Every structure is written in C-alpha cells, then in structure tokens.
Length: 322
Image (cartoon, rainbow, N blue to C red; front, side, top):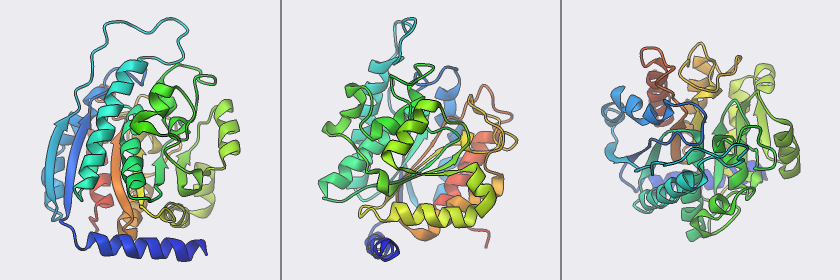
C-alpha cells in the first residue's frame, strides 16, 4: 500500500512539474551563529565561486540568484552555560528564509538554499512545510548528515543550534524556533528519513526512538548498499502528498572527499555513494526544495568541498553521466 501511495504521489507531482517552467531560485544564508567555528558563513560564496549558477543553467534550467539573506550581526557573545547560543539572530534569519522559500514555491519554482550552518534548515523547511500546509498537503524530507541534529535545549552538550534543527521541526525546542511560520510541528516523522548518521548523542537516541523517524545509518549503508537504502528513503518521503525537501550537510561525506567542514566524522558517504543518492532523487522526481550546508571555507582545501557541493546539486537536478 505504501509503495502504491508513493507511486501515485510521484506521478501527480511529475505531471504538475511538466506544466511548469524548469526554474531554480538560489538563496544564500551566510549564517554561522549555529556553529562553533567561523568560516561556514562563507559557504554560499564558495558555491557561487564554483560556477553554480552557470552550471545549473547548462542543464536547461532558468536560474535566478536572489542573493543572500541579511543576517543580523550580534553585539554580544553567548552567556556562559547558555543552551541556545544566538537564538534571536538565528530565529530572525530563519523567519526571513521561511518566507522566501514559501514565495519561491508559490511561484512554481525550486528553491536552492545555500548555507551557512545547518540551523538554517529550520527556516527553509518551515517555508516548505508552510507551503504544503496552505495546499492541504503533507511534506516529506530526506536529511543527509553525519549527526542526528535532534538535540534540544535539555540535551545539547554545546548550546549550538546547528545540532537541533531536526528536533525543532518536530516541535521540540525553543518557541522562537518551533513556532516559525505560525504552527508546530512542521513535519510528520512517518514521511521523513535521515541518511548517513554515525555520530549520535544519548539524548538524541531517546528522541529518535520516541518519534520513530527512520534513520539509515552508515552501518546499514555498508550492509545493504546505497542503492537499496536510497530506494527506501525516497519511498518513505514520497508518501507525503506535497513531495519532499532534501537537505544535505557536507559532513555526511567522508572527510577525504569533503575536508571543508567543522564537524568532520570519519567513515562517511563516498563520492560515488553521494552522487548515486542525488541521481536517484533526480530520477524519482518528487524533490521540491534542495539545500546544501556546512561548507567551511576556512577548513576547505582549494575549494574542494564547495566544488563537490556543486556537483551534488547538479546530480540532484538531473545531471547524468550519459
């Protein structure tokens, strides 16, 4: 039954797509307040330097670069022991991003969001969920990450909000974040899949178990293979009637391929596994929003990680070997 529902939703979404202009709107979010290390705010610029707009246009898309969200500059440092660093600045940026993403979707175009740290997913996915809600549709999600990103103010070991966005989207956390777009939770766990986890905190394990969200860890990818795991992830997310968003944290990749991240964990997705995942998403046709985050230019080598980020974006938008 689940496969039939997913297939029916995919057919409806593809039929709708065929009537629309193939258009991509780029939105940069140079935000680093959710992380603990400077440099990630330059991620959007690094992706643009890698000729992002021109290379997407070569695939046949109309491409508009809407520029960057203006991130409020903080005048103070977080208080010692704070469990929500830079809450107001992150909330303000995410509110603006949610509005921008919802507007792009309402225009029949695909938002391509460039981070910045992964706290921005609170904004991008709130915008996607709000758009789906306005059409009485459900929203799905495929989240690529080495970490669960499901800490709360009660469980966080650092106070860095980039470790909390997925929990926020499920309605757990500070009201300034959970209530963006005026409703919570934003997502139903049964339409969401996390891919690539290999570093999960104790508090996150409890919340994952409580919510029942599907986690496809690196152990499972090793055992079953990326092809089978992505088929399952796409099937789960495609059961949402409004399609699904994709958010890709570059630390999901193996550090050998993507050194430019402040949260490196050994044993990640290989170059080809990541491309296969994006290629299968493109073939499935249900993606409605795409985001790439956590490229830290201060740690990258010759823009290697940003270049790979662009290549993965191209694969998700339909670039193939032949």
